[in-house]
Image (cartoon, rainbow, N blue to C red; front, side, top):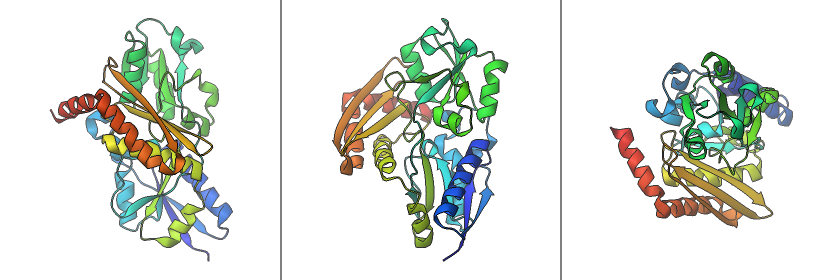
Length: 311
């Protein structure tokens, strides 16, 4: 039966691309449905001159949208999965994880120089503590420069801020038709991606079966399995933007392999682990991987960063 759906989204070009893609996917599977978009400005959109780690982390990009959903103003929301906090508010759930785009990080540099050929002391822009810590571990000589704003703004700052390179998510660049700007895809052996990077999150209310029926049709089971394993890892570590945490999962047959890391802010200490098991146990694997990291010393890093954030 035809119905009207309202999708909540941020107003950035990438967020709108994601929302329009979701709208098209719904209309393809449920002809006759009316799908409208409601643009909601989040605190993360308003605060652009302060690093995320200093103003509250990931929740800044989703809270106002989730509030609108809980209030019944919208039926579902489309987020970048990597922007989702480890815990979803009571009354809401992840209704769908569509097929994941490339999860890797991408280097965009002046003169098209790859990462290993950037000059000594190169200024590299990123808004991510995860990226910054891994870069400093690889090249302690790099100067990490905080970089906020939408894709166009960050690309422009490559020149206006006198940067040698910037690091962005490959998925966003590809979705916006900017793949030709990529100098190099950084392999996960060099830079492990953020939890959920490259995946979309279609969030809905738990007590709305009609909307859940629609979102379920957009779900990609393999992508959901991997992403939920990564998110279980993040949840166990109680991670957010204030902590350099990374994880990436791969499926081979019925086996899920998760690799994760926790790093100190300066990259001097990076603790890595991996764990494999049956894909049906994705979330258990994520938790167990986190436990391995904690036992291997990550707990000390997390505790010290927690104390630092409370100062």
